[in-house]
Picture 1 (cartoon, rainbow, N blue to C red):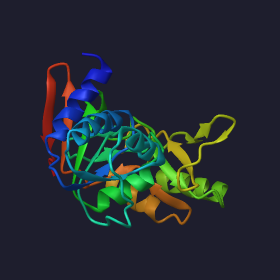
Picture 2 (tube, rainbow, N blue to C red):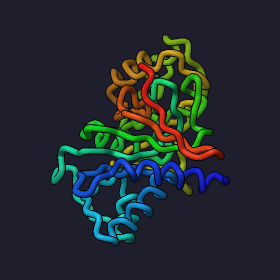
Picture 3 (tube, rainbow, N blue to C red):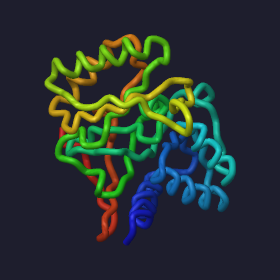
Length: 232
């Protein structure tokens, strides 16, 4: 089973949790896109759902495939969100934002009764941090914000490169008009402490630590998909 087949298996398992008539948050990324394709097939067969996309990229795919969409203002309370992740630990704490949609992903997840994370088993980690942590920042005062991130991280014993994400000939810009700094800490022993420190920096719009948000994770491997409950 190759990587795409594993993503499809995880998406298929997640789809069994979606009921007709649900208000559904729809994630961003390659695994979430497999979920959208499968969801579209059910919608074409008469399955009713109203989706709130977490990015313009996801919105375009949903429109192309015929998945009905609403804005979060139109559907401010959601039954379920299905989204991917860049890292998942045993407590279902996540690193997200590799696709650049972390702010909207977190807003949509927070508006949802349940969050199901879908991924292949390569995303499972003992300790978060192997994947560079995306930190969404305001372009104004970028240098000052970067210095503040370095200092806050150092207080927690975290070191590593802080790289401003690029796209083409310039800075990567999120759907909200912000930049992303990817922090290569390598290992984040105290994710809660880091989350609190980053939240205290005015120039940080949001970060990719999704703590205590996932209800369950569906992990696909060569033997098929399995479900993980939070170990908190």
